[in-house]
Image 1 (cartoon, rainbow, N blue to C red):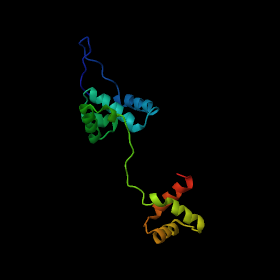
Image 2 (cartoon, helix red, strand yellow):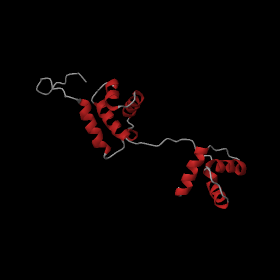
Image 3 (tube, rainbow, N blue to C red):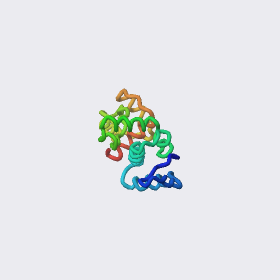
Image 4 (cartoon, rainbow, N blue to C red):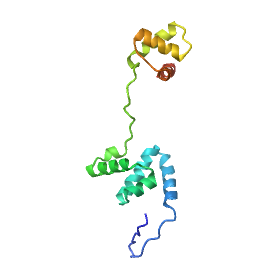
Length: 146
């Protein structure tokens, strides 16, 4: 960001005292309206349009080189809708997705006190091996009705 920008009057423009401070204020403002990653993307797209180098964009926004290349690719392909959409990872589907109701019925019928006991019951009665932490997530999900 040490390049001199020429104004319309032919004189070099004064450099900003601390561009990181200004960008932090911009990020905080944008985060009032959108998630942090989207705010970084918006600023990244603006910096790309201004012709700032990838290294400088990485330093200023915290975006990775891969993210910047992806933004540039989307801009060049005219894929503007993808620039400002955020999605959730596809992730791996739950082992118990189709049998949650069976597990809930079994839990209502019998007395299980620990997650390990529930994991053992699922393995024994339904033939699915689940970790204790996965059982905890399942129990939390079924307790909240989600």
